[in-house]
Amino acid sequence: MVAFTPCFRSSDDAYRRRLGERQPATGQETVGGECRPGSQGPPGCRRRRPLPLPAALRPRDRPASLAFGIVAAKTMRRPNILLTGTPGVGKTTLGKELASRSGLKYISVGDLAREGELYDGYDEEYDCPILDEDRVVDELENEMRDGGVIVDYHGCDFFPERWFHIVFVLRTDNSVLYKRLETRGYNEKKLKDNIQCEIFQVLYEEAIASYKEEIVHQLPSNNPEELEDNINKILKWIEQWVKDHNS
Image (cartoon, rainbow, N blue to C red; front, side, top):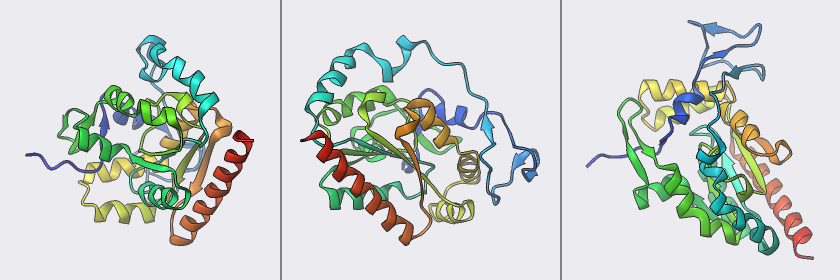
């Protein structure tokens, strides 16, 4: 029996594509041609994006779900929220506490995949299962239709765009993140690659490429004070959303 780690790789190799070739911005300190894990990556770091799949092949654009989007806009009384970011930035802690205080339902895609065995193999190099994205989307469809859901995952480009009313990308200083991932027992390659993801703002780029930029927001997540501040900000946003959509 394989002991799965909390980190999942997408079945379409999205995780490796996220770590594709990038050029550091002018003046960025590098080691061996890469941004040094201990340094703060500047906004100018960008990855080279792969060619997009034809629309018919993208799970997030499947025609079968279009009707749901139309119905949901009229019937939802509470918003759907996506929490994303590099593993270790604090998505689970924020999501569970936010759900406890708001009454929204918290769903960890990692837990969902584990419980439902929503896998498409195992990646020995990264020591993690390969997520079956299509099955995850199918599993979540009914939950998202009703609204009032907080989804937590370290990827966001395979979810249907219409699911979420707001997207929060958590960001953590590299030195803090390194220590968090080290305590999880990540192997050297997985630790290094996750730090590079954070340096290059990969999840933020993925979010603004997948959703309307005006609904994507970055939140610092380094200490308990920032956690509390983030919770209060999101609670206020939820309260306002409910007022605006239930009057």
